[in-house]
Amino acid sequence: MQVFTLYEGSYSVDASKKFIPFNPETDDPKSRPASLFIHVQPFLVQLKDQLLLLDTGLGYSNDKGLLILHENIRKAGFDPEDVTMVLMSHLHFDHSGGMIHKLDNKIELSFPHANYVIQRGEWEAAFTNPSSSYKTEIFDFLQRNAQLTFIDGSGQLSEGISYELTGAHTPFHQVFLLDDGVDKVFFGGDVLPEPEELLRKFIAKYDFDGRKAMELREEFGNRAAEENWNCLFYHGKSRASGHVSKAEGQFKIS
Image (cartoon, rainbow, N blue to C red; front, side, top):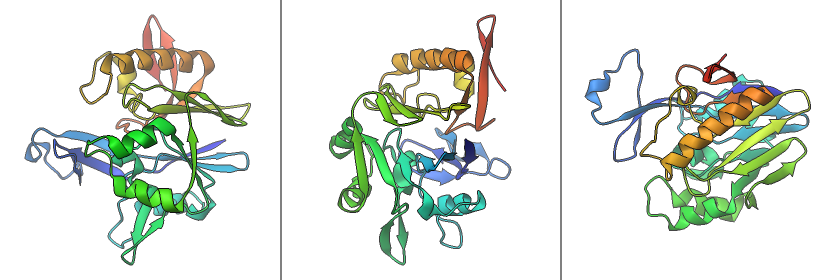
């Protein structure tokens, strides 16, 4: 199994939920008051005969008008049209914006040959939730044009791909575990978005159920240490992935 980090950039996010590019080397965080600062990095995984994309980023384009996500996939040695499955942890814009893109003022599927895998409850909530984190125009287009697979609860999607309904960040958030018989790769979406969240306990206001999210981070950290998971951190600043170990009650990521 091969894993590729598709770094889309660093951004500041304020109460308006707008993601504004932020360069830590040149931009002053004091100029962006009351903002969160995050990295956005989907992941591409080659698993046997499948090419999987784990979440799709914001869907922003570079200064040449090309989708950053597509360019990063090409840099990894693949063609975006070769993606066979897009596995969505949830549908907040910073995870789902790249499911579609505009080309010559026309909207197209970013991955026309892929099967988009989404929790049914998350899909239904995206249309009814008034939060600005959901962009229904994206989902309307997908509904008309994409190959969609809706799943419920937890289970096995196919050989080597399992999913688990966690809730916590959103009511129908899910995580994925990939297993090729040699390596295990865990994608925790926004329940485990950064390695630092394993190192300290806290309840986040941005989670639907912050206490449950905190408890799940502990649970997944223990399972990762026991089963030697390679954990992928979608919003990780210090590192994008790592293996977890535990000694004297403390997690360590390497």
